[in-house]
Image (cartoon, rainbow, N blue to C red; front, side, top):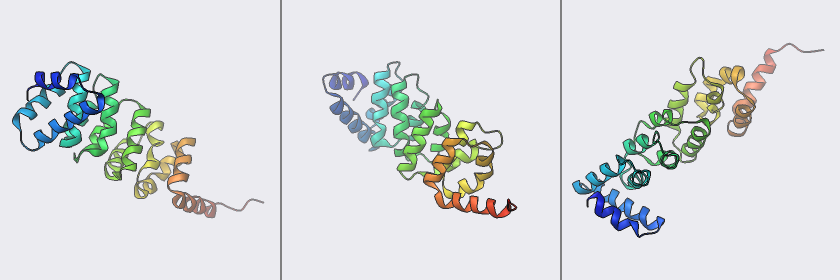
Length: 194
């Protein structure tokens, strides 16, 4: 189905039904329908945010990471937010690259938290490992507690030096045993105070 007839078809539908039709288009493309693939490419490349959002909805079926990662830098905030929520659903092995494309600390935090809830710690660890090398921004350091215990253990010195209250609150909630062991080691290394 070409873009024009698809848009005419979904124009008279409610949001839920439009989304369902976009997912059906994505399924057809995933099954090898060249016309559906061309329609999706046209939607994703459209100057209209509405059409780009419909194109993004097709990724619910295709799990096309390139469409989702590309939408993370879309000019439309609505498209960017939907793409950030969909990032955890993609089969794209390079989800960490998508995290780097997210604009704004709040959006990045929400997306990382969503990935963690979906059990996608691998991309979160990869992104935070690379992003928290020497000289990391405090906002990125505050996201380290979302990572796996192994990465958090490696980044404890960084958290000690540059982590804010938010980082320590998250760390205590998510990795309490690690924090307790770290404090215990720190206290054992100190001299007794009279």
